[in-house]
Length: 274
Ligand code: ZN
Image 1: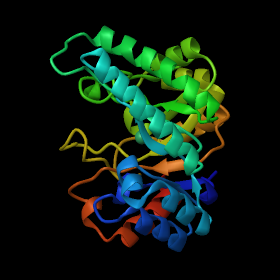
Image 2: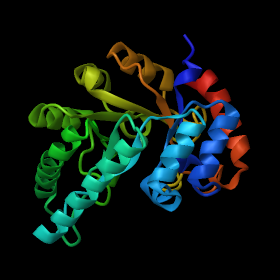
Image 3: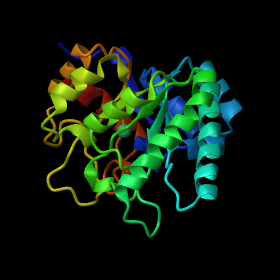
Image 4: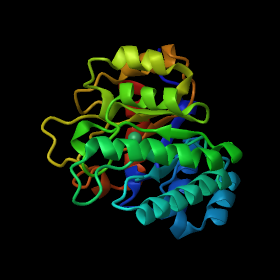
C-alpha cells in the first residue's frame, strides 16, 4: 500500500537554508502539500499571529511545532528559564493550531557528566510543563534522539525510554517517532507497538552511508539504509493515522538545491520510498 499523499507534511527545516516560513507556506500550497511543521526561529521571524493567518489562508494544517525541550541546566535559574521558554512554545504551538509540540529534551548541562541527573531533570521539566500543555490542550511529543546526541541534544535516546517517561507522566504527553533516530533499535517493533496511540508524529528522512556530519547530513528517503516502509507499517499497525513529516538537515546537498526541486523530489520519494 502506498502512503496517503494527503498526509505528507513539510518540516520547514528541510528548506531552512533557502526559504523563510512564509516562502515555505507558499511552497507547500504551490506543490499541494497539505501539512507543514515550522521551527520556532522561523516562526519568530515571521511573527506568530501572521504565520497563523498565512497558514489558514493557504489552507494548510500544522503537524507540529519544533521545538520545545532543552530542560537540563546547571542551576535552578537555568531550569526556570528553560521552563518559561517551553511555556511560550506551548502557547505558540496552540496559536498556530499544531497537533503537538515536539520536545528535543536536552542533554548534559555544560561541565556535567551526570547523565542520570540530566534524565531526571528532563522528567521533572516535562512534568512541570504539563500543567500549561494540558490547559492549552497541546500534546507534548517526546522525540527520542539517536544516542550520538545524548551529550548535547537529547538524553532520551530510545523509544523504550520515551515510553517509560510517558508511563510515569500520564496524559498529555506522547512520542514523535523519527526514523533517523530509531531505525537501529533492536526493540523497534515492540516499542512502537507499546507506544500505540501515544504516537503523535512520524518523521521521515534517511540514514546515509557514510554519514559525514552528525547533525547536518541526513538523506532523502530512498537514498539510505532505513527500511522506511517497514517502520511506517509498524506505526500504522500501532494505530497512528496522522501526518508524516519530512525533516532533512542537509548542509551539502538538499539545502543547496532549488527548494521547488526539493519539494518535487520529496513528493516522488514519499510515494516511492515510504
Ligand atoms: Zn524529527
